[in-house]
Image 1 (tube, rainbow, N blue to C red):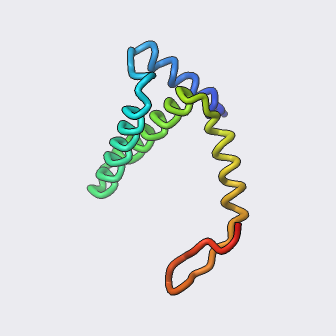
Image 2 (image 1 turned 135 degrees about the horizontal axis):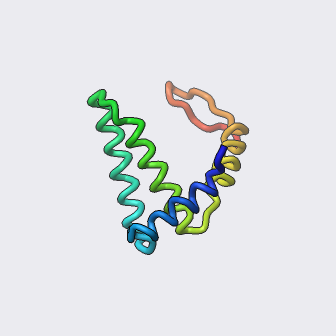
Length: 100
């Protein structure tokens, strides 16, 4: 299995090789947003491309993480552990965080 950190480095290397953006952080966030919208649209239309669009989201996210020098795999693991410890309760029909 390939680690996310290794994929980050491969994606970044491909961005450099192909001449894609590696400096405009705002643009990268916009491109991620665009890819999420494309995935949503494909799902809504019941198109077979949803998986490919989600892969694009992940690729842009991993690329941005490498640009920002963030180990996304480590951050995901940390966040999953944090989320597992949170306590939620339904209050007036709305799920609300009540602990941690």
